[in-house]
Amino acid sequence: WLKSGHRHTATCVECHLPHAGLSKWAAKAEHGFRHSAAFTLQNFKEPIEITPRDRDIVRVNCVRCHEGLVHAVVGGPGPMRGPLDCLHCHAGAGHGAGG
Image (cartoon, rainbow, N blue to C red):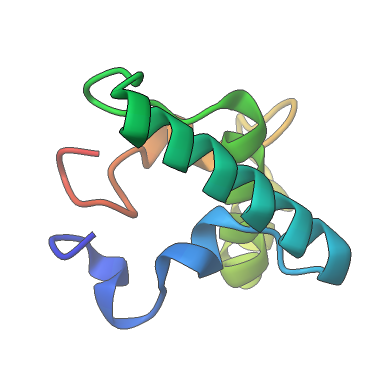
């Protein structure tokens, strides 16, 4: 994160948690439990991988913050088809070039 362009504009929570009331707190509790268990038991992959559900949360937050740009890319003519997956092309955007 310190090597990314987002270090001055976003925190971990702004990208990795939903922004709506109850879903934010539910995800925060679930992440806390899962991360505590994984690190205590040393039961995680290296490098750490994002879950499909958490990837969707990040995607929604990308679109929320970059709404004008996303609309210009997806709303206009071009090859974009199907659901938008920002991380397909911008995998390292939040954590720097290494992802």
